[in-house]
Image (cartoon, rainbow, N blue to C red; front, side, top):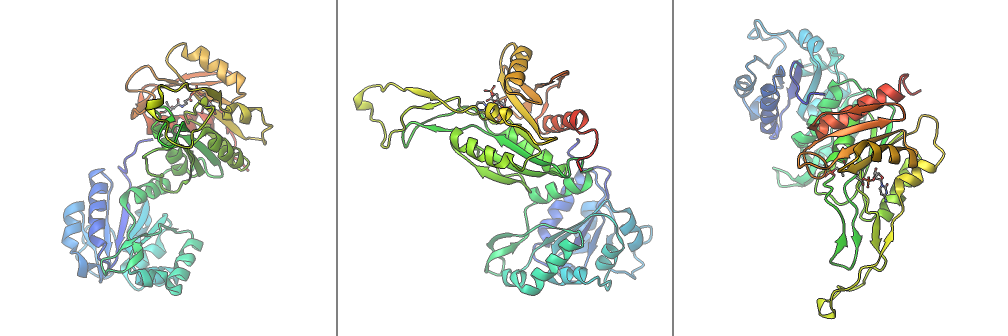
Length: 405
Ligand code: PMT
């Protein structure tokens, strides 16, 4: 999947809120990615930011009135509604949210939204107390019932000095929702469970055994599954990465904690992708206090951790439940992969070449060989995000020839 928005018509509805200036940045990004970005502004929006700003950023007429004739050559509001790939209303004020919830068509934005069949994404931004008011919350519930996607605002200090929810969500989250609304949701109905990152096995309160996994591969898998319509749970060892938007993340530290979380979540999962780098061993003793060097170098006795994937692979699966493993290898890639595929009773294994600096641990790119019982698919060097999509493409093709009921 390309990551751009090129070729799509993303109609942006801007309402009256100080956060309107942030949306100018979003519009600029979308326009640079070669999306068409017609902007519709409510009357109050124009008190905060001028139509000229958006016109300059998009190279398009800005729509400010239902009856204005200044849009000669531009789309009418009905054309806007029909041509849109998606409607993005940001910042969405309490007033516009109320209008949309009740089906009013008394300004250009509400009329166009009523007339569209494209997905509608609503990003509220307003004073905390206005946001929390029962009337606004009821209106947002109504929008969800109508099938609109509401992207909850963030909490923090507001321009009016109040603190709480109401701040316009960040672009990174909106981007995810836009991607999900623009692509075909071929994983809709799937409950995807992904593991990512390393585990940490404590020696004492200061030290642990771990490995170089950053979580990038697993987080890319979780993000890709969400974008393709799945419900996603990410069980993550320690990682500095932000939780991908729309994904439920469970943070764990040790292999034992990961084991417990995976077994519990696997009950509801239709697909498990186990990209975490789990420590095979842990110290036999975890010291309560920091081990002092004055006592000389201590012997570190290790014991085996449970092999989570092996234990899951042995369990009886529900019909259609898929288990995908990873194998980090620097030599005999295919042979090692086949051995682990069989021993752990997997549907597929992604053998990760970790011999170069551009593949495997910490890198932004990756090179995998996908092995199923009867097929070997060599993927080229790709970004981890493209690699994740290729894995799901293969899963769809091989194991989901008919949609899940
Ligand atoms: O996180 P990044 O920096 O992006 O790096 C990505 C990665 C290199 C960690 C990832 O792509 C990868 O290869 N993950 C698997 C690493 C690994 O632990 O490989 P393994 O061959 O040791 O284990 C095989 C499989 O068994 C894996 O799916 C692993 O999750 C699982 N396993 C291993 C040991 C154990 N005790 N329990 C397990 O479930």
